[in-house]
Image (tube, rainbow, N blue to C red; front, side, top):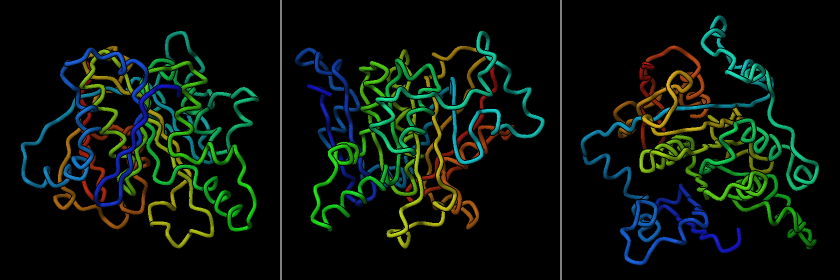
Length: 320
């Protein structure tokens, strides 16, 4: 990461932690130039805690338009895009021009030296991200409730046993470690943001990626959302929706007017207070990422992803 600027932000309610690596390009901003949205948030971290409060104050609803250029998802038994298709919906996902194996190709195979630096789950996460060609030039948004908690647990066990923690475990225990390894592998210098926000993690990750693309229409964002069940020692802290894990969801997102017609899926995103459309017991027991996939791969016109602090309303926009 070198001289790249790395920042950590904590929400006042203790639920969300955001780490940002803005990339080398931001260091070259001329003195006196107006700060962008990310700079403002960096200097005023408490604004993150005010987001739900402001929205609850009945501010006018704003819809952010965006497109999903490409996607990949993984969970046990679903190793390819085709394995996620609804029965009879295969015709909605034709083979991409010049890439006839797009639907049936699994996550990318990693070089041996890279595999040796990561856990088995970490390999699946990075492999899923590399399944999208956009990983070469998009800004990364990693969203995970716990990160690779098993790695952190090994460090705690080593300390408890008065043993020296593994240097590899120590270096990979930080929340943005995989984003760093992915950027090294791809040579991507666009920077990254990592988000953890309890049950709302996927929603805030999606919002971060969409907002970045709306702010910078010529650039894309790669949302990498992932989680796995907590280790047995911490299972009493596991929430109902975590029963649907492990799950990895990767989306290449662009501003709506920057996406290629005919290949991208277009959507509108709106935020509402959660109490206006509280999740049912069944919906609350499903990870938000899985709820999103169910909508994304269906022909439904609209869905709501309800978390603890916000509801994210997604509407499908017809292709031109």
